Structure formats: C-alpha cells, structure tokens
Image 1 (cartoon, rainbow, N blue to C red):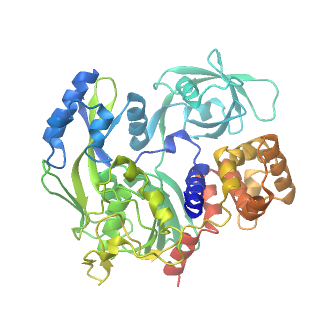
Image 2 (tube, rainbow, N blue to C red):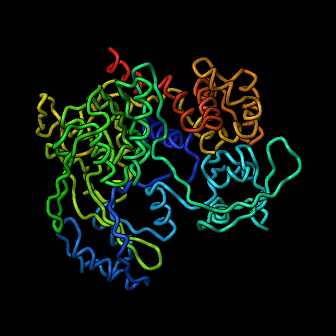
Image 3 (tube, rainbow, N blue to C red):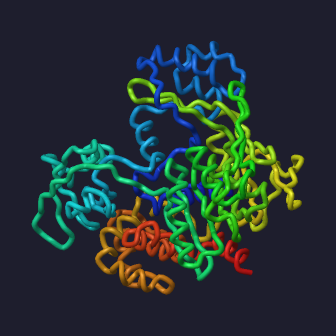
Length: 535
C-alpha cells in the first residue's frame, strides 16, 4: 500500500470516528434507507419461506427487470446484494430500532447514558419523560435495574439497553447514585412514550440569521421544523443556514414535507418511477413557513437519500445555495416488507428524480463491497481534501440548466454550488487512536464534568477553552489508559485535542444545541454560509 494511501485511510478512520464523537447516543446511529413502510403486510418467518417470499416480492416490486428465480439458492444477504446496495434484510432488533428512530418516539424511561468504567452514567434525561418526573438527573449513576446489578460487570451496551427499555405502562426499578452522594436511592419509574425531535439544534447565529440542523428525516420532521422556525421567527429570523451534513436520510415524504416549507405553491419537488411503480410526482401545496428569505443548505459526502431529495429540489429551483461537498449519491427508494418474527425486507422499488429530471444515484456496477468503499475512494483521490474542487467525472456529463442559468449534473450525488474541503489538520495516527478508544468522552465524563458548570459554559461560549491544567491532566489520563504518546504527533494534534475536549464538554452539559453552538464558531462551511447570507 502506498504511503499516501495509508495516510488517507488513517484520515478516513479519524474522520469517521470524529463524526460520531459527539453522537454517542444509540438511537442516533441511523442507517441510510429513505423508504416507505407497509406495516399491514406480514410474511412468513422461516428461512425457507422467507426466501420464497422475497423472490415473490422481487418479481412484483423490484425497480428493474431481474431474473429472480436465479437467486433462489443464495443466502438472503447474498441474494439481495445481487440487486443493489440498498435492498437489505433487517433482523428483528435492527428493524425495530430503525422504525423507532424514524417514527420520532420510543417506549422507555427517557434517558441517555454512557458506559464509563463499567458504570452506567446518565448523560441526559428528557424533561418530558418518565425518568425526569421520577427524579433521575444528568450525572447520576445507575447501579441496578430491578434486581440486576449493571454497574461494574462489563455488560455489553445491548444487554443494558434491553433491561431499561420496555413497553409503555410497565414499571422498572432503578437503583441510583446521585451525583455527589454516597448513598444509593431507589426510583420506581413507569415507562412511557418518549418523543424525540429530528431537529438537533436551532438557534440564532446573529440578529437575522438562524442555524437549524436536521439529523434525520423521520415521521415528525415537518412538524418539528415548523415548531422550531416559528420560535426563530419570533426572534427576528430572516435568513437561514440549514445543516443536512451527515443526515443519512429517512422517509421520502419527510423530505417533500420539508421542501414544501421553502418552495411556493405547485412546484415539482421530486418524482419517483420504477418498473412496477408508475411515475409519481410530488408537488408543493404552498403556505410554507419560509418561502421567502435567503437560504444556505450544508451537505457533505454523508448526506444521503432524503437529504439529497431536498437539496436537489432547492438547487434545481434556484431557491438557495448548496454549500459543502458532493453528497452520497443515493437515488433509490425502498419499501419495507415485514416478516412475522419482526425482521423486515427493505426492497428498492423505484428511482427518484429531481425537478429537472436528474437521477443522483451513483454507480454500483462494481459490486457491493466497492460501493461500500466509494467514499473512501473519494478521500484517496483527493476529492474531499483538495484546496479547489477536483474535476469529477460527473462534470463531464451533459449538464441540466436551471431557470436561473446554473449548470447542475446527474449521477453520483448533488454537487455543491460552493465547495468546502474537509479540514484534516491535526488528524494523525495518535489522534485516531484517542478517538477510537473513546478517551475524549471518557475524560470529559470522568474528570472535566466536575470542573465546570452548564451556566458557566453557556456564558463563556465565544471565549471558552479548556485550561492548560486540563490538558496536562488529559495526558496523564491517556497514559493511565496505557496508550503510548507519540510526541511529534501529539504536538501536531494539540489544537484539535483542545477543540474536541471543549466540544465534548459542551455536549455533556448543554446537549446537541451546546455542541453545535460551540462547533459552529470555527466551522468552515458555516463561515461560507454566513458570508453568502450576510455579504
């Protein structure tokens, strides 16, 4: 392997881990599907009958012509990989978790926690949830769930989740050690339905410009957005930065519902079509909350599916500026078919096309594994990190022309109007190791959380940084984890270490909103958006 390739792969590892560094909560890890769900149909639950049913569904529903009978003797995953990368089989647990995430609610007690030194540390308590009403607070430690001791036993996260979550109306007894106390207390909590917004953050950057980040396109994205934007309008919002970076998609109708908030009446947002699915057009109905006002939409290589539907409509109709890097390139629509055991088939039934008729699906002719590594290939080719945008093969295609005279292209994702490279300064093998071993999060929860308060961090947002004293203690903490310190790489990554510790601290005390407020102060894409919106 070439030295440059090894370095790029290392950067890719560090980058991918960084993306989830501030997102350590299980329900936020979503898969890119972009599907519609048929919940009233249940299919057989044995492997043999499942394969037969899948073959039958493919014949009736698959987006392209395919000889389904030739797939009969393959295992389910291999069978589906012969079709396209987004037709997948979901085991019962994955199907349930995906459904919960996209529906925007779940049944449980309403807590988020992190496993720190074999202890369940409560990192967030939903204020409208059962746990909050019962007295559970951030910083508490969960010692027992019912009669089962869960701290100090190295239980896997999945086992712990299964013990705390449960059906609405059922009770769970939690033995808790409140922060700063030495005597545990017992809380009896009745599980309920907990609402989770798809809006990660919404706030005013300046007197006229709002920032909104949407983490996924779920069943309630449209209503979540309307609630957020009404609040921001009351604060004087006239311009908007809409952040769809790392948004892997979700429901197609959620994307069209959001687009309707920005576009005037009777505008084509997207259309879908497949071999067994006649063309379906999705038009705006008018009356949206932000049909006027300047708009900048942020995307990157992990913006997929429903995110691309929205960005494509905004770009094709000249409604706003797209800023960032080329999006993922998923132009396939899945429908979900459920099996009796709770597992499900997500099958591609159609392609979607932007208002100008662009398909943005990237090629999968090289096979499933090559498709999985396509973003890594972009990194190795320099597309994500070059100072100026590299000429992509897409740009050799015949362009589509918007009414405003802008050239846009089909295939391989949405090309931004303004390119912003991936900032990799400070990323190296040592930093990647710290990320991979979760040292930043552990140190913040284990040490820094006792040194600061939410009120202080909120007031000091624009000037705060961790102290040199904190940094020295961090290095001692690294050594205690038996991680060798490479002095040269440490020096190179020092500014990034300071920044990441700050972001994790803000996330712990002020949640997603605090995280993004702190992060956006130095974010290059946000800076580009602000320069466009506030020339």
